[in-house]
Length: 328
Image (tube, rainbow, N blue to C red):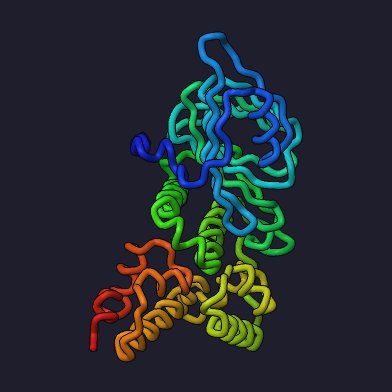
């Protein structure tokens, strides 16, 4: 399935967060290596010199990066560090070698490099990558203890779940660019963005069949603990791993427990409760004449995409948040 090319503006995503601008091979090798892994960098051909730009934003323990070398380059990090690296080409193409496997990535195919796996790459001169870097222990928290996260070296963006996740990455990067000054002041929003990306990413990993649910008393206790924890921390960063840990079960078991009790997923339930808390705050501000903006309220409860917040709010309460704020 052919995927349309990203918008031209996507090529310079995260330009509000410039990290490196360089034409020096030595500087590029050193500074990019400081972010990812030490590596050997070689420019191929003689028609174009290096024209590196690297934008980077940190989300909790993970980071979103947009990287462009401006030349055909060979990148040889050998055995990489203890992190996953999702490589989503925005333009151009690259060949990735991981262990004994080769894959060509482009605007229709992404790659996922496993932690501590020998790898080599050749990026084309027009290649621009959107990269998600996250430590392996963070991914492990999301898939649950005792489960070994594995994923194919490449996935086609035409696969429905992959397409949805890629679109979420792009939307989030655009949103960060647009609302950079606002969300940086709200740790809850930052954690929510990392949690959203990693929860979706963990679902793309190959995992064994869902474990059998615990017996009824344990299920009820886990459900109660999870809900109590969510309600007590609506204004704090929440991840599926955090909720599951306080419910004393694995993330996958917690999702199964919620499903068997007719509830939405734990994170969807948390979103409903955060919307309710935002609704209460907006009504209180309207009643008391407080100078509070919709964006400030949304970010305070971890909503980082204003359009999506308004749509979700309207679906739950039948009106826009701005209408609630204006109500006497």
